[in-house]
Amino acid sequence: MSESEATIEMERGIAQIEASYREALESARDENELRRRNAQYVGAQGELTKLMKWMPKVPGDRKKDLGRRVNQLKQAIEALFSARLEAIEAEAMRAELEGPFLDVSLAGRGVRPGRLHPITRVEAELLDIFGALGFDVADGPLVDYHENCFDRLGFPPDHPATDMQDTFFVTRRQTGASATTLLRTHTSTIQIREMMRRKPPLAVVAPGTVFRRDDDATHSPMFYQLEGFLVDRDVSFADLKGVLTLFAKRLFHEDILVRFRPSYFPFVEPGGEVDISCVFCEAWTHDHERTAGCKVCKGTGWLEVLGCGMIHPVVFENVGYDPEEVTGFAFGMGLDRIAMLKYGIPNIKLLYENDVRFLSGF
Ligand code: FA5
Image (cartoon, rainbow, N blue to C red; front, side, top):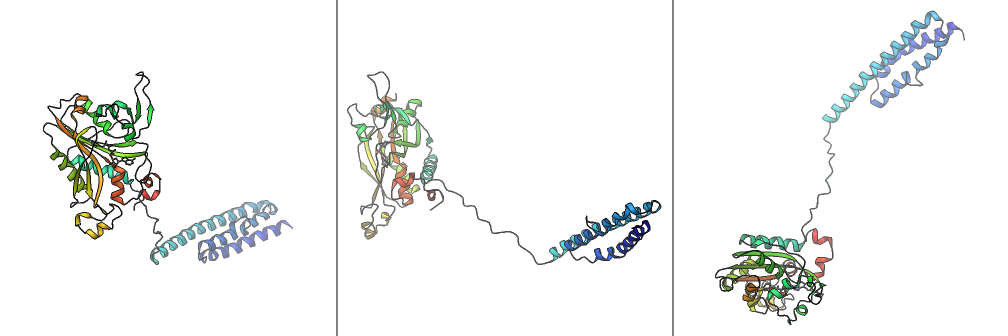
């Protein structure tokens, strides 16, 4: 191929491209088509790029002019491409904005908030109720001394206390060498600790876990109690009845009936147990037929919820209070028992099986 042929090819190519590119780019209807057509001119295999292959053969005096024209053409194509691309994008945006509304949001999965464990809920409710009556909240250690769990509470040394509240011992007293420690069997240990620490008047509630060698549908080796006690001058059994009746009404039902039965605990005198009218057959409505068929209260209409009594003078002496000066009452309830009654949970074990439904609402 001669030099003049190369020049002619380039001239012809440039003329062809000049004649066609504008129409080609302007008639492109969308971005893809525009890019494709642009590439046909200035892409790696594009016509303008191919034209440059003639350049080495073009005579020296024409090289500069043809090179400049190819460059100008390339710039013109690129400028037109950019302008068209912008216009096409603007048009697409306008069409989308003016077109039918497209809802791109998905109905979400919904957040399912968890719930507190039934025992935690019962505990919080009780603290609210007793807090409103002016009771403070106290805590104590899970491992405590034999003295705080039994001796100072007036359990006589030969008392079968450790049978009555089958105890897990941590250490045993070795001929007086070291104190006996145990997993507390009731929260009454906190009565002793708080009374030794503070002077009356005082009104305290103390929730916490306690441990006994017990294991059946209504007894667990670890369970929760809430202890309550109030010490002041002239505290009477009427105060105890008033506080516990109010507690039962607030926790369960305004119309609930409360019954006090005599019972024995070494640290109270007189001592009693409190029954509430059954919350399942709603025994306070006196629907005798319904109560007769109730499996929860076994037809009696009553459910036992706690132990209580007037604090024994011996306990006051053991903590350094003068029983001639102060009187007081104490009570202790099983929170598991109350949670089971409140939420209709048939077996205490269910509370400790980590069944996630207990935390997701029921
Ligand atoms: C006591 O533990 C006394 N400290 C309560 C008390 C305090 C009486 C102050 C007087 C004055 P009792 O052993 O009855 O009492 O237990 C109290 C409650 O704990 C019971 O009514 C029952 O609801 C619950 N309870 C007892 N053992 C278990 C167990 N193994 N599992 C679940 N709950 C239990």
